[in-house]
Image (cartoon, rainbow, N blue to C red; front, top):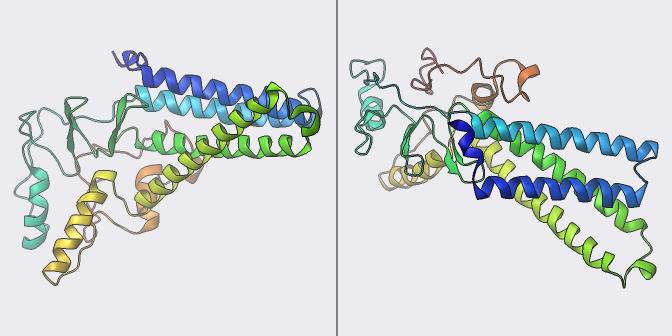
Length: 279
């Protein structure tokens, strides 16, 4: 059952962290700065509640969505000669058989030792969602990181605004000082961590790469330079096409984690010189 993924210590830790940040933002930062009953306080409370709720929704989508598995009937199309001989030889390694699952693996598919199965367009296994990040839930994962980053930065700004107006000569010697230091370090550290993760996945999306493919590309570039050649990631179609292959062609649905109707089978992908294959 997919709901069983929620029963894990990392998932509980995420819930506790979300609750801690939400409580301190509303009842420490906003309350001490302008007060929750004021118009400004109500606005900030509603805005942050929306971000927190959207983060939680995206988190559930990440956890409960199957990242994608290889159909039992899948067999690589070895007769596909649309590619050049060199390109065919380079990509046929991606149509290999998994020694663990004893099934063929399409391009961009990798075996997850934690989930004990092959995952389509696998990016990585994330313990914090107790699930793999793959073809069907990568968009939700990206939106989760994006919204959570915005929320944590927003919380940090509210905390700084609160701290600047507080009279520390009165409060500095009390237990409130330790509370503020703890809250400040927490939200600032969370903002830096999530912000770094967001920048990383923006880079990957702009280049139509997964985390696994990035490290594969590092080795491929080294081997290419060693032999006097150049390397280009075969799935890099240009920034706009790369982004729309993940978020979808409709910009109005880019921030909807469940809007994945543009995704196909997760087996065939467009490559740089062939735009006729399904994505």
